[in-house]
Image 1 (cartoon, one colour):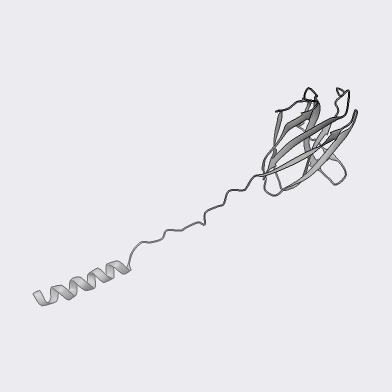
Image 2 (cartoon, rainbow, N blue to C red):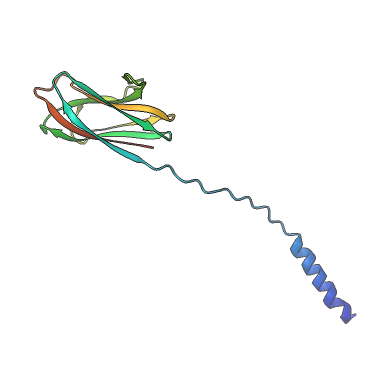
Length: 139
């Protein structure tokens, strides 16, 4: 009887090992989208407006921040919208601030990939040409 126990136990162990329940499905890890920061600068004249288009590759947050104004006490209008190749259209709800100073940030959401824009403009407060710099961060 002892002679049969060894091979019988070995056969049972091998059979059990071959019947494992290894149904684990592995999903490839998703790489989070990479934020893109673009810097736009120029000089805005009295009653002027400048539009800067940019392309969003992944839907998500879009922020525009006024980083430099010269003269430093200037106030500009700033808005985020969609770009059709000719105009920057600011939809509802309006993403605009007519009293943007250094440090002011507009935050919106790009619901789809595509062409967007940031616009700076004189909202009636400029008394001289004003240099500006702003950053736009998107995905």
